[in-house]
Image (cartoon, one colour):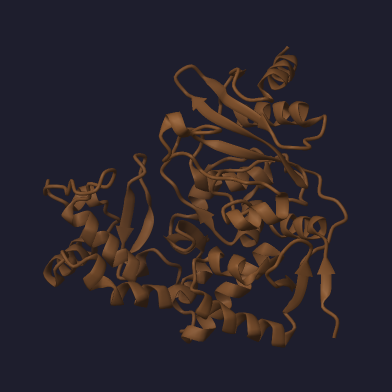
Length: 403
């Protein structure tokens, strides 16, 4: 049987279609729109950096257009109506609630690693935290529970209290779940039975192999076409967990082995993947967007070399602190370093850079998208600073849009 071969352009369009970029932006996205979008992405990475907009909001914006962020709050709060729950899915991330049973192997792994990662948390302290949360009858933050206990200063940027360490352990093992976050972005913990809907709690237990299969299946649907490395990364699994699941899905016909132009690794096409002849997207992508978070995949699909420079010293940064790729049609054509200057009400473009071969309409299309983003963030003018080879042309287009 001859293995099907895809060009890189075909694979790129399949991948973008699987991620929801065939949909036109909605005039007023609804909860149904959000649910359909999350069904495609399968996960929304959470990150505390708020220089522009928090990471979990941006992939929804990139696919749906301007939306009321309260939709995400409603989808990830309450109990019986809850659609998403926060867990270590890719990294810290929102995932559909129905994936909770498929993460049991991960909770078991964390339990086995307790002595390595949380050896300072005693059984008595852990039991006390669970008991206090149960007695409170509502979600609690680490600050609610630490009683002013001293915070560790061993690790820069962490400085966790003893309560925070214990809560992290209990959440990782599934003894607690994340009910939400407060306005300071602090995690609010509660008992799983007070966070998850009854429909999820009643789901049957899965064997470990069934859990792996469920996650690889979801990753394959979200990718459209992917290598084993791509599928492994999506839910941060081990390759030994992924290979048997791939074999099962190939045998059932759900995945088809394919080759992709320029890729040395074998790939797999999902049987339900759409194969559009064109993709007419115009979107800024978060650094934590599933389209670009696996760097090797981004390079193969888009010929786009991308590294996050948040943790790079300023003098060593090439493109900037918070750099977003710009997707135009089915290519990544530029990248911009953005900052929401809330004090002045401006969207600042700290740097703008064109990719090799960027089309002539790149600056005009990017200026239009920046204007739309500024409106969504309740900011006024777009200010383009003179840094990067696209900055001058982008400034002209931004000024034209503002006039």
